[in-house]
Length: 148
Image (cartoon, rainbow, N blue to C red; front, top):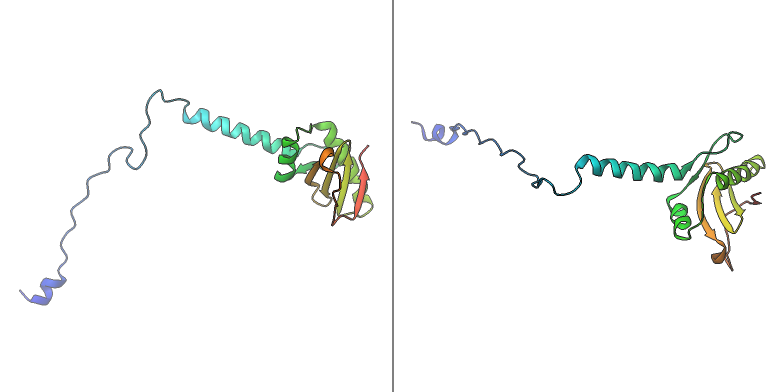
């Protein structure tokens, strides 16, 4: 046979053995704890609760709710500051007033709490609890309002 043809000849490739069932994943042992569905449901519940807290509903009189940034939510949680429908309603009312005057970035004073709020986005950017407000300077705000 021609030596060039011999070099370019392609030999058939034998079929590979089928991979074993579950190959490439770690083994799951029966009775090793919660099932995947239970773990998934728990994780989804945690995420839904965090999302609901971040996007708390506003009162019916207001057009939109007040959202919390991740930073503001962490600050409120670490300071153990209550954040519920009453606080949301008061902040929403204050933000509505600022928006009516054309404000974009507002300092909202709520009880013993200072909040920096993006008015167009209706989002609390950061929260400063009372004991940490001393000697703080709030910059890049164009409005200030005391939430009633």
